Every structure is written in structure tokens, then in C-alpha cells.
Length: 478
Image 1: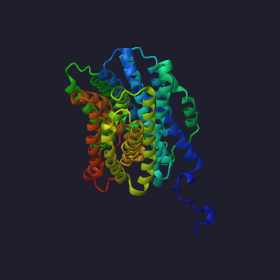
Image 2: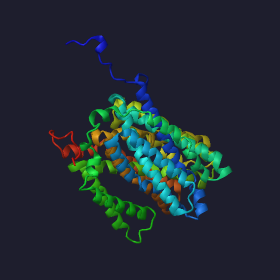
Image 3: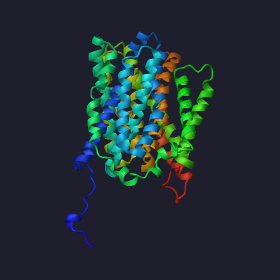
Image 4: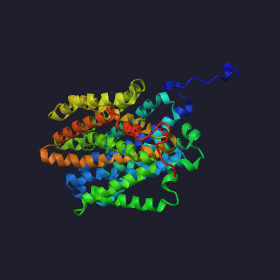
């Protein structure tokens, strides 16, 4: 029977103005959560020198507090991702924002190294859940032709949150001390929770999963025959990672690294079945991406204060321009990638960024305006291009396992962010300068990531390990 004009299905939206009101609300609610995420997460990098002085820590010891949030992220990505796959993206988004809000406020009450380490680990759990659940929520709510833009626009909120944190640092820390930076981080949480409670569930998850509880990651991970063993493995992993990144291994560091790697492989095998090498390849890609970006993210404020001797106002302004570059780069990357493709855009952005790394860290003190320009462009091309990561990773997983697959693989790889400040501080000692160390890490790992994504290694592994008959099913059933 012919379809009448009144019955015709409208074409899918291809621009932001064509999105429905529900799709726009979904984006705004997730975007605000990412903004708070960026605000809360980078606070520790801004006040690292103040905390080190208060707690009487060396720079290397204080840098492990940056790593603390990364130590717990794999767990947040796994558990909150499983909740998102089983009960919907919206409940996982709400739990994530509550977790990192609580953790951030508790940081303001920290009384020493270990209390701050634990509270930052709580922040990490929330951040991991936020990344996986919000990214999948927005992408599954938007048309497929706009999903690079969905990812890029969404991740632009993170650097905006970082910019607001830098402005807050300039206004608050000189007058009231570093603890108040963490206290005020809870203020916008009520608004974010209100917006998220009123949201509809992601359309794609409702259509493909909904009430089918037998096909999600929670079934795989928490089935009666696995839940006890998986809990024990998770506890063992958490303990090993705390010892490694707090530098309290007692000489058993290599053994603990092997334990951690084995635990991650065990979870990957459960989630991805015989295609677990694909998941591991994604983890390696993300790990290297954090190693090129996070030394700069975490140690740039310290570099500006200790090497260039800038005051808090100058540091704040420099971070403002770096954050704006990150945000602009994420939006541009999303728009370009919907035309040129995700991988091609990603690789082009990475190679362009290499032209700006050397000038940033070769620039002597006093050239503040030029530093702002260089930081803006460098972060737009290097860090901004990472706005495509949720789309790139999410394409490797079906809807029923996407939140946990994205959350777990990304946040295990994010352990590169835990290694990054330690590597930066360590290399700086051997090379005689923090700027040289940041340059070496940024350039070398940028090339590695560009090659992995350019040659599409995870997908090549997947194609080599599957057949046409089961190529769409990249995971295991319980």
C-alpha cells in the first residue's frame, strides 16, 4: 500500500537545528555532566604544589595523587557500564555524577596523603561511569550520521569545565586556600541531577535491549557462577593498582603488574569472548593516547609555575586558552569526521599537532601572548581530536554491550593517565627539565597512536579472528 504524505517518515536529522527537543535535552544534560567532570577532575593538577607543601610531599609523591583517580577508573567503567547496559543509560549517568561529586567534596576534607588518594579514587569511579554512560547515551539518542559530532560536541564540555576550574583557582586559592576549590565543585550537581531525572531513555538502547536482561554485560559478569570470583578478582586488581601507583610495591612491582594484566585479560575475555584481543588493542590505543596527552594535562600548571615562574593569574590565563583550544578542537573534529570519517580525521589532527609541541616548550618566560596562541592550537589538534574516541571505540561494540565495552576498554587504557605524571616527573629528573620531558612523551606517543588508528589495528585484528557468519557478534553470551 502506498504511503501518504502524512504517513511518511521524516528524514533523519543531519544538523543540530533539525534535532528533536528530546535529543537536544539529552545532549545538554550529558554536556553539563561532562563539564562538571572536567571541573572536578583537574582540580588536583591546579593545586598540586599547594597540596605537596601542606602534606610535606615531594613532587613525585604528589603526582601519584593525580594518578589515584585513574587507578579506580577501570572499575567505574566496568560496573557502571554494566548497570548502563542492564538498566539503561540514564540510571548509570545519575550514579556517575553522584559518585564524582561526593569524591570531590571529600577531597576538601583530606587530612593527608592516603585520605586524598582514596577520595580521588572515588572521583575516578564517577568519571569513568560518566564517560561511558553519557557518551553512549548521546550517541544512541542522535542519528547515526551525526554521531561523530555527538561525541566531539559532548567532549568539548570537559575542557570548558577545566577552564572554569582554572578561573576558580585564580579567584579562590589566593584568598581562601586550595580546599575551597573542592567544596564549590558540588554546587551545580543539583541542576545536573534534575536535568537527568527528566530525560527519556536512549532510543537505540530501548529498541535493541530494553527489558532483555539476558543479553547484557551484567549477565556476563554477575551470573551466579561468576559473581564471587569476579568480585575477588576486582578486589585483587584494586589492591595491586593502589600499591603500584602509590609506589608502595615493596620490591614486587613486576609481579603486581603481571597480576593486573592477567585480571584485565580475564574481564576482557568474559566481555568480548574470543575477540578479546580486539578489546586489548583498544586498551593499548587509549593507553598511548593518555601517555601523549596527560603529561601535559597534569603537569602543565606545575611547569608554568616552577619553570617559567608564572603567577596564579598567568597560569589561569594560559590554561584558559589551552582549554578553549581543546573544546574548539573537539567540536571541529566531530564536524569534520562526519564528512571525512573518524579515523582519517583523527590521524590528520594528530600529525598536525606535532608542529606545535616543540614551540610550546621551547618558548622562554615572558612571551605570554604567543604561549596562549600556541597552547590553543596545540590542544585543539592533539587533545581536541580525542573527542572522536567515544565514537571510534563504540563502533567496536554492539548496543547491548556498548556502555561496559566502551567504559571498560577506555578506562583501562586511561591508566596511561596514571602513568603519565609519574613518567613526566621521572623523565624530567633524568633529562634536566620538565619541558623536555613533556615534549618527548607528547611527540613519541602521538606518532604511535596515529599509526595504530591509521592502520586500524583493532579492526584488523577483529576481521582476522571472525567470519562473515558471526562478524556482528563481537561478544560472548553468559
